[in-house]
Image 1 (tube, rainbow, N blue to C red):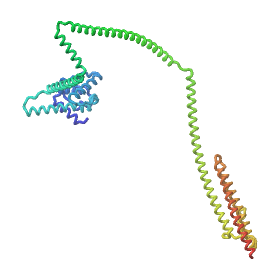
Image 2 (cartoon, rainbow, N blue to C red; image 1 turned 45 degrees about the horizontal axis):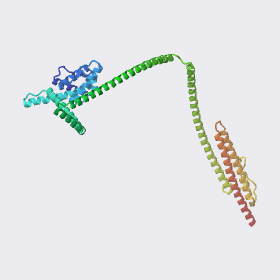
Image 3 (tube, rainbow, N blue to C red; image 1 turned 90 degrees about the vertical axis):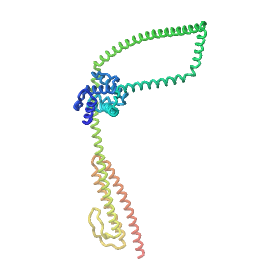
Image 4 (cartoon, helix red, strand yellow; image 1 turned 45 degrees about the vertical axis):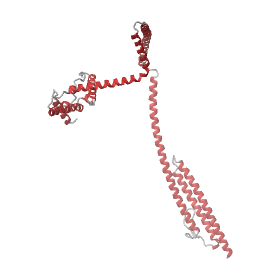
Length: 418
């Protein structure tokens, strides 16, 4: 709530002639008595005929007072009030009170302007409100009478015959007052109605007696059920005070379960961690084996190229060969040209033997590197690589043997030509 609204409210209440002095500080804290007094005064100022309770001692009385005031203003002045804000009785309530105060202030201003313009004594606001109330009541009665008349006209076809019969009967009685037939008929009808009413009364009395009997039966059942309920409650209280025999064992088993569960969680976490570490180790070993395999293939390819170059006479002299034990080149005695092919074949076999020795040494080094626990996959991979290298070496030897055979056949042809 702003200071401006508080100031406007105090000024409007002063101009309306509120008997008490209202300050801006009155609404800093909740003050329900002041709010109720201001609201009651403004409602009576708006229409003295509005009935609103004045009791605000208890919480229910306050709620009833605010609800009745809000309903009255909504019905009379079409002003919607927020009862929650009014019940707060602080600056938020001033917003709701300001709605009524502004309405009253605008009405007083209009009335003052009329007095100044016409110079006539204006009619008071309460009298005008009474006329409005009477007009509204009259409009309601007219509406209800029209609805009732419409319903009766809708039943005209049904009651027309009965009305004609009743008029005929009345005309007969009025035309012949000395005759007793009509009087006897009326008496007979009245007696029938009386007898029917007596029968209804007797039936109602019988039903009342039956209801009394049922009431007694129900009272007895209620008493019996209440007794059973009391006994069951006593039994329940007695059972609640008794400790079960198996409760100690249950608590012990519950503690054991908690301990085993904690142990299970710890082992499960350790197992998961070790599996993760094993996967990382296997991955590293696999990468290492792949790297060794690529290095071995590169060395084999290099040796193969050197061998092929040696066989073709491009890089190494035919009179030199590589020792199987890893020694250097040695000179051999000069041989005739016809035995050159044989020397190349023998040298090729010696080189192949050196390649096999180097491959076996590499396989042994791989097996020794993978001999740690948990590295079965590495050893299996090294065995497979040794087999593959052996097969590749065999294929190379066969290919080179075929090349050597072709070279020897060519040398034989040349010797025959010579």
